[in-house]
Image 1 (cartoon, rainbow, N blue to C red):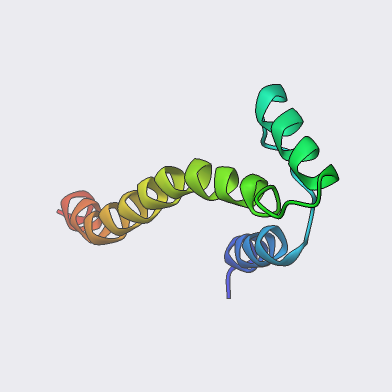
Image 2: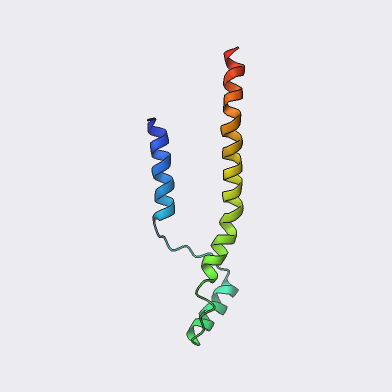
Amino acid sequence: MNYKKIATVLLIFALIFIGLEVVAQCPMCKAAAESNMKEGGTSGNGLNRGILYLFFTPFTLAGVIGSVWWWKNRGISNTIQGE
């Protein structure tokens, strides 16, 4: 196998499975969630995860669509260059 492919796959798995804490809240949302948690509420638990989900969904879709497009059209460019 190509070393670039192996490195890419390992990087993708590392980014998916390494649990880093990412803070994606605006200051107002963070203050509201923290005050809710201090008062014993549970609505702030999933707020950060929901924001990250909404942030990464369009980028994931664009990446998948771009990859499929590139994968289908790479054979076309090889046949044009071969002629």
